[in-house]
Image (tube, rainbow, N blue to C red; front, side, top):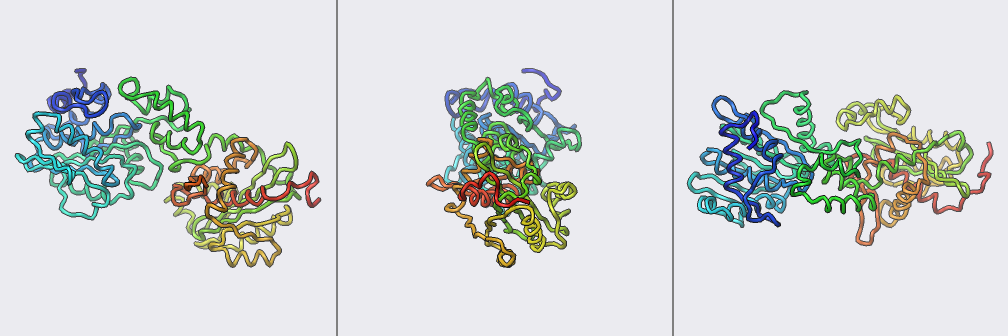
Length: 515
């Protein structure tokens, strides 16, 4: 075995446990001894278990592992759970395998149970209770149990080891907090989490991801924290196979590159799958669960939108006022004037002045910078004052011919009545599949064909990056604010305005008004 600075009896014991006691359980490797790949041995097992203090206690108490899927995460996690259960010298050890739900928690447990069954030595030492997802060791009073996230309210944990599978899927931090605070009575406990990247930047996984990066970069000195992240940089070409190896150390070993090529091809052909590929296969943190519009395609359609050149042109407005405490959006869509012309988009956004700084800190979104640059407008107080939106629309009506204003009636009754009194044609727009599907699909089509310019507005770009859609069995689509990781109000307003624009006759070459 290659020597490292942690090549001592502790690291050798861990390596030997894997390679002399355990065997693989699936596929072509099933039944063969668990010979660790070089990177598994030298970058994970040896440093994790070989870094000890003068008394021989393990230094690392928390380990965060982030890597692309199909790189043997379940097998490594199962092996570590069994090592903590059987070979760590802890009487009455309690090992918990945690995951988002019972099915996910069962994945690592089932691998561990099969490893026990295939080992004559371990099979004699352990008792497997499949119905309770538990492996017990009668001679030491120890056990390994799989538990889902909804077990967070249970009491009495005294964990020696915690193995968390796919941390990015945890619905909240409750189970993590309960388990990690239950290790205080143990001499050398270990909380081991292994995951692909996620998209929810308010999650416990993102918190650990950020902390791990700070440990790796030296910003934080934490000798108790083991961090290991393998991912493709965000600015790298996700379609370049050479970059795939950065997030998939098992490529060229037991990871099948043909399967990755198939998924990459599907992601290129189906834009909504791009984020899925980047998140799960390249271990890149994305802005949403499955981005509907590829950001590079959106950027390619920025173009130049000159408001002065559009003076007198007819347009259609979409108005999303769903939240008075967050952000409100209005988007103007100018339809093409005959052959060779394309759609033009101008967005407007409002935020409450008093809560802006707090929301900026909480959401990690540069509202202040956007405000200074004129990309958003702040209204006094802690809620959005619709009077400012009304005034903006009336000011714009002096410049553009706003034929219709499509609106979501939620929270907009008063301002809609006022705008009708001002002479605007207000069109109530439903937020369900029936109303949203056609313009949502049309927006994607226009972007992919580069038949729409939006000027590269940074707030709208951010919301495009957040946009997730829901699909029904009939393949109808609509924006999904619940699944989108951040705000998408501007994209909703754009879709509403686009719907009204594409349903109207193409305006003549001279426009409606001449100023």
